[in-house]
Amino acid sequence: MMKLNLINYIRNKSLRWRIMICIAIATLILFASLLTTMRLSLYSMNNLGASYKSNSELTHFSQAVTTTEKAMEDYVSYRTFESIDAYYNSRTKVEDYFEKFQEFPSKNEVAHKEYIVHQLTEAFLYYSNLAISARRANNEDEISLNYSYAMDSYNYLLSQILELNNLRLQQNAERYEANQSKIVISNTLGVVFFLIFSILIFFVLYFTITSIMDPLVEISEVAHKVARRNFDVPLFNRESNDEIGNICKAFDRMIISIREYIDTIWEKARTEAELKEKEIEMQALYTDAQLRALQNQINPHFLFNTLNTGAQLAMMENADKTCYFIEQVADFFRYNIQQQSRTVSIDEELALVDNFVYIMKVRFGNRLEFIKKIPEGSFPQQIPSMTLQPLVENCIKHGLKNSKGKVCLEVSIEDKYIVISISDNGEGMPEQTRKAVFEAVASGTTRLAPEVLDDNSTHNGTGLISVFLRLRLQFHRDDLFDITDAEGTSETPGTKFIIRIPKHV
Image: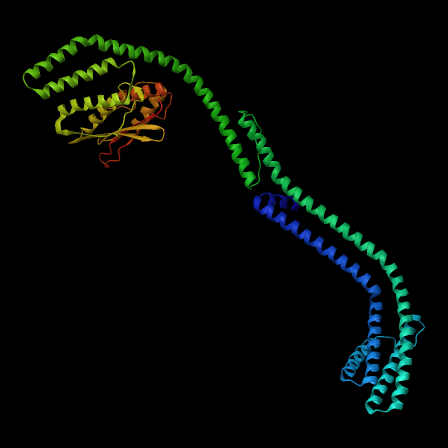
């Protein structure tokens, strides 16, 4: 149970934490391996060095005795300050060394030989000191006698030191052979510990990397399947809260959402395909019937001839404004009738708006203020005819409910779109009506639902829905039109119609 809790605790930690802990563990194991190997090597070196340390010390002792003898001989012969100083310095070293030797006889051959060396060293130092003292007193008899005894002790001491060195060398050789097996064992243990620590580091790194990479490999395989539009993949259902667990949970939610969305799309597409087919047929019949009814009600030739006659009559009477007004009315109806069944450029629609606004200004006078913001250049992009005029008419209708109506038409270029906005300062469109307009466009109907309209409603929506439906049918998109508030006052928020036309159409 404790092991399971520990595993869950580690899995819930972040990847950075797990990687840093892995590196820390590997570093500790490597440090332990290095420390163990160094201690084993130091142990081997100490064993090997201890085997011949006594021989090295005996060699230094022999050199100190020889230096002492040489200094004594120089002083006896030349009586110089340098020689007496060298004598006492080397004598001190000899005393430090020989105090370590055996002071009593022993049955052990090496220990007994150390005792002999100890005694001979004392004799040599004793007689050499007497020789030095006699030389200071210039006592020739004492100098010769003590110098002779000192040299005899010195020569015999060197021979005993050599024998002791040989005995120690033989003893140390035996110790070396005994320590050789220990050195081999320690070296073998060093290699074994190094291999064990290396294997531990390998497994720590392997399990850590595997715990990180296995889910990533699984995610990669599933992602490739999804990229090939294969959404029939098993879910991860991971419970960990680390970065990979969060990715898996997000991936599961995405797969579920995609499946639900695809099912919804297929169902909606099947329904819409059936309705759209009928809708297009009915719309075509309805539009054709409207056009035929309008053409049957008004004889275009008679209407245009009548308007032209009125314009000529006004011109003859020097009524220039009346003449211009009648010409604008004639142009408006001519455009309305002739362009019903085809697309036109944005420039043509803007010209029609100017024509229509002129007529409205003649009708309403100063009650109507029309503001137009159009950048320089032409806009040849094709849109359905009679797209902008119904929106301008709608804004004029609702803007004039105030003491003074204000309508603003603005054209701008944003990224890949020509954005046309038409706004008024009227009472604004209720949110319920706005939603109903878009629902009607989505369903393909040309009128608002009866429950949306009431006796006080000023929006029947027919003109708006017709404009939006024709844009949708031409461009096969639902994101080209929108209705928002015009950012007016709280009492007159106004309404803004926004149309986005792709540049390259």
